[in-house]
Length: 152
Image (cartoon, rainbow, N blue to C red; front, side, top):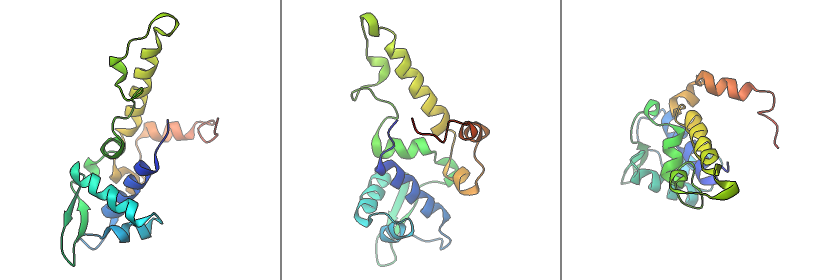
């Protein structure tokens, strides 16, 4: 699976908003600086996240962005879907809508299982879990597997 810069930056931006102690809106540029991300890219991502309801914005000199709902209600999957679309698509289509013939007849099941696997991780982790360091046991177990930290 390829995790885009957009998804990575979006999750990181929301984590910054979730941990901001000011209680007020945070400027996109401030979010970008804290995580060493390109400011314009982050601003565009925050606008996309606003369309999905994950953030809200306030205009004016003291304006900026705030979470659209509590961090404990926003999953990593929610964020990724908001900026990149479905978690698992095959050539832009949902895996269940694709039919293969011949030697590839069972490939559809592989793509559907892949999507299911992604969901089991990304839908289980909220922003609050990441901030608190209290990741679900499945995530901790998967991250502790000996080969998890080795690129193949």
